[in-house]
Image (tube, rainbow, N blue to C red; front, side, top):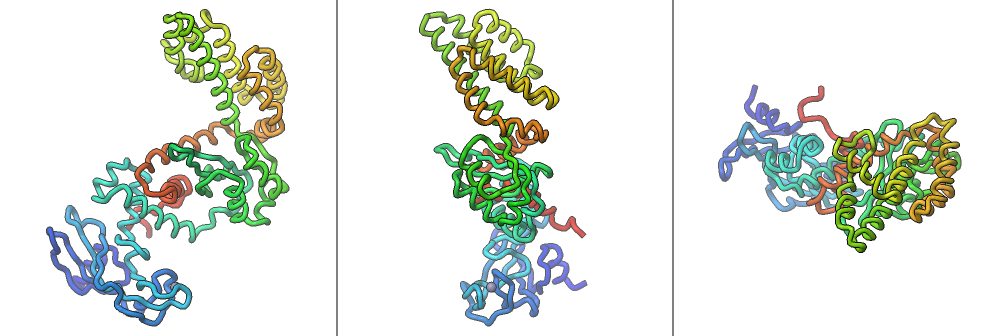
Length: 413
Ligand SMILES: [Zn+2]
């Protein structure tokens, strides 16, 4: 085998002719190459053969996967063509995506690692900045998303908002309840963002939606009601339980403040210590937390009542559906006469949202799944700190939760 072909295969250059190999600065391997003749003079965007324009900015280098421990680069001319559709653009090369300074296999590996490993591991192993990983994710996700129809066969979906940065910046995300996949995400949380999703779906597919779950926000339910005639709207159990947790927290703070002002330092301390015990689900409590809860039960009936109300609301999602409605009735009555303002307010909200809450129970919309996806998106959001834009975050989320991550280079037949 000619050594040029060996180098082309080693660096994953595809249909390229290797012209030479040398050591560059600092001992990196530099392979000079050019596309095979039938792939020359093609538009970098669409790949259409196009008339030549000029030599562009001269020679260019693309980082390739390391050869063992040695850095490797591909070097080639980067002339420009004039595409009928895209105007004057740099020519396509078989080894790299348009606009990238990395080879395809380098980028695929970077994405696979970004999905699997810690930020630090990816950046150190690949010797690139995490921010650069974000830009790579964007390119790869855009390509994979264009090749696949993520919005096909949607019947049950969840629409939710995720805060991705301090200062009230949000993403709207859409999840397929059947596959558990993230199918769409965009920056913003308003009517316009939901409408952009419904536009992407188109009227026919909107009509095929059978169930749309969300929190209780009207910016989601409004456009869905208008444009998805056959969809039952459900309230995500996760959000209902979250509201009860918030109400409990308001009561806890009130009680704690009262105790502090009254100079009851021991009680105030106990209440503070019981915070995590109150938040946790009973089956996950440690022995110590059980003890703290027992103290609350003895010392503060208001707070303990709030705790029981929260727990009981959670229970409506755990009983067979024929009992759920009766249990919800009982809960509403209890909350209304609880003399706890945050829970009386919650009772009003739940009464208003009752059809959506019951629809979720009736359809067996699993809280665990909705919550798991939410948790995963939040984890990705945290990892995406350091990316330059929400687009990079969305790309990483689509690679991880949307099934768009490429396999490791060289692993598919
Ligand atoms: Zn073109």
